[in-house]
Amino acid sequence: MSRPGPPQEPVRNSLIDDAKARLKKHDSGTKYSHCSSNKFSILLPLLAKDGKLYLLFTLRSEKLRRSPGEVCFPGGKCEPTDADDVATALREAQEEVGLRPHQVEVVCCLMPLPFDVRLGVELACL
Image 1 (cartoon, helix red, strand yellow):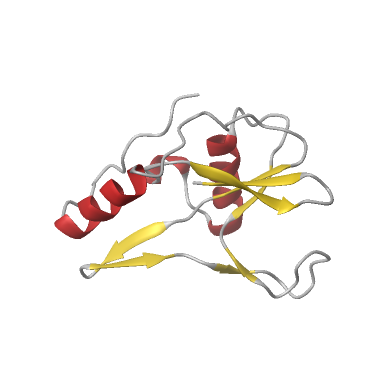
Image 2 (cartoon, rainbow, N blue to C red; image 1 turned 30 degrees about the vertical axis):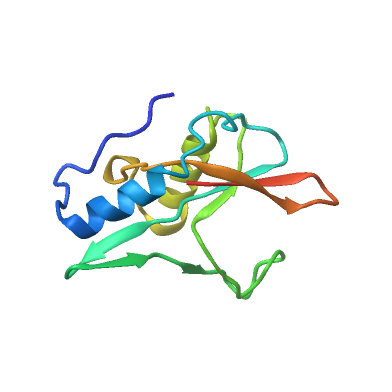
């Protein structure tokens, strides 16, 4: 699966370009991009506004069984229809915060982290 391109009206400034360059140094590419039944992917949405960079967090509902009330990034479990980690993270971000895939420029894929060693769960960060 190819990664989505840049947003239709990309913001160009040295702050964003510098952040992208720094993030790309940690890009693991598609090396870990397989989708397994115990894999979750999250999107780290970096937003530019008024010359500053912000990370978008979400607050989980208190009514959820797992991790109620926690602050987190948009993301979730890999579905059988997801081609890879990018597809999972983009699908979940659209479901959770209404962020459409064409609005996202995937800068890099970070190396997955063990999320729950007992269950063998991996967490991929984009």
